[in-house]
Image 1 (cartoon, one colour):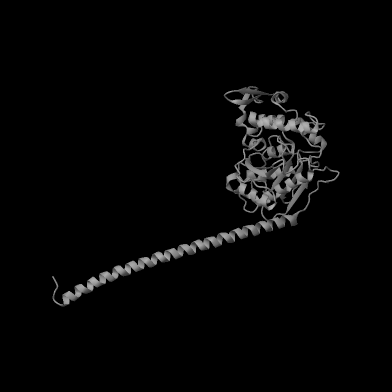
Image 2 (cartoon, rainbow, N blue to C red):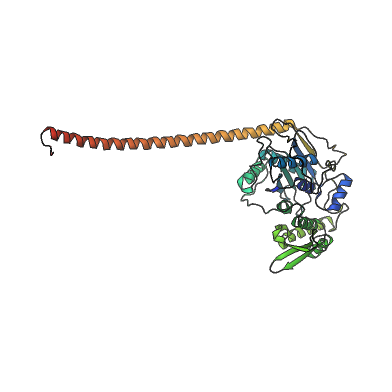
Length: 416
């Protein structure tokens, strides 16, 4: 079974940088040196055949600026229960990628990037779906499937049923975990930086209890404060003024509260016992040895604040553009050359299926509307007939009275 959630993103560079490298500068440097990213599986589709994350970011920024939009992306997280997909099985991770691609195709006619992670704190496979906030067919911002309540959950459930996967019988809107919740905070701001470091600390395999977790937090310059009134809070020095800042755990995400963290501690503890160790592995913690390689060169992607492009730059878009999808299976450059894979036929089939679905739904809507109009017209006719009948009865009565009166006058019995 899966859950889906969405948040708008005002920073394409920040969102892309996070899903590819995270926020730990040392780990980011290590990944780049090794020619790797966090992605366990990867796919990207862009108008015009572009195929690098840097091009994806530039296009998102350019379109947002040209149209005066605050939000550059819609950021989705599609997460699966650990029992459904095994994070240690590359075929399962690629299946998660394919499901995310299909969901993106069903949702929008827009550029998207799919990044699958296997390093979640709870050990579940999940996919980040970053969609440029621009409909390539209409030229408008994305209007559909931007809310869990208004179609997104239903569309995801429909996809899971079509793919033979289980669906939650009584779904509730999932509480966003940190990887989605972070989009609600200012890029590079105190809350986002603090949350990223807390999340890194929770991901650390050493964090099997609160005491060790506090030690790991201290390595990131964070202190855990616990009170009966506020529960867990986190403190960290602000970079802009050096003052100590504080944020309640519940104000960031439920994952960072005592109850949420305990669930993650238990997961690390069980996993450590299963593998005979609770310490970090040789790769430095949660980074898998088979992460997708060949994506380290993101075209000089600047993960800091990017300068805005000139407003008069040509905005490339439109439904006539060709598409390429770049995919990775997580096996490295020895088995995957990382070159763009032309899946035009597959995409055309998906679009055709979507069109057939839409046409069928539209035909059903038209038929229902026709039936409603026919029923309403029939009702109006019945009402009109009743009124005609009433008028006829009233008119007949008036005429009868007038006839009697005239007859009386003719016979000389008039009163006036």
